[in-house]
Length: 85
Image 1 (cartoon, rainbow, N blue to C red):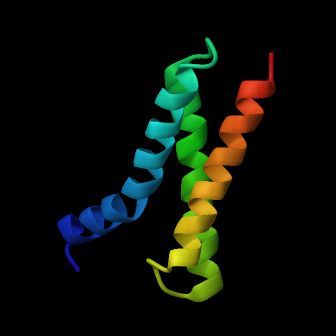
Image 2: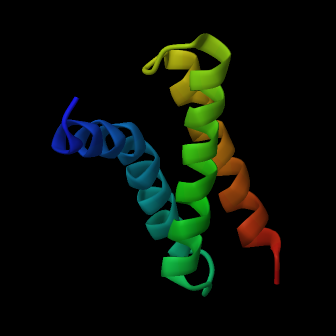
Image 3: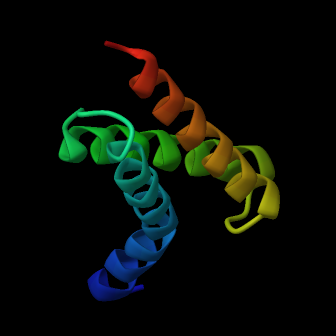
């Protein structure tokens, strides 16, 4: 596997977490005045950790339960960020 292949594989692995984190940060921005960039970063890191947990648990990437864990983890993080004053 070349460097470009490895970089694209890593990008494709993390892209769903970054996308869901960004959408939730934009949605949460409507309800709170927190920093958009900070919320996006925290949501994205939470999503990547959830995907890594799914990868370690199942041994393969792309299971629907991993993506469900991604959404639940990001939503919980967003909820906790919204409650914090």
